[in-house]
Image (cartoon, rainbow, N blue to C red; front, side, top):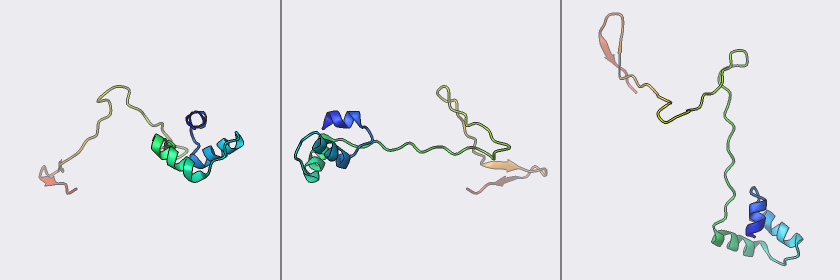
Length: 91
């Protein structure tokens, strides 16, 4: 079962049951499911595709961090206007 799971990483216990039966094993899905859980096997989650930024005519590429502390975000607590009177921004 471990060899089949390594050879087919996207296969769950149902597909492993079919592959075992194809190889000549007489097993039922409940037994394979119980052994699958005892062995701690899981199908890895699919990575979701990231959407493009902007529109097609004004698109830009998504930048990735190249080193630690490379990506920063700015959080404004106060904003000044032309009258230089500070106002609090409510989050």
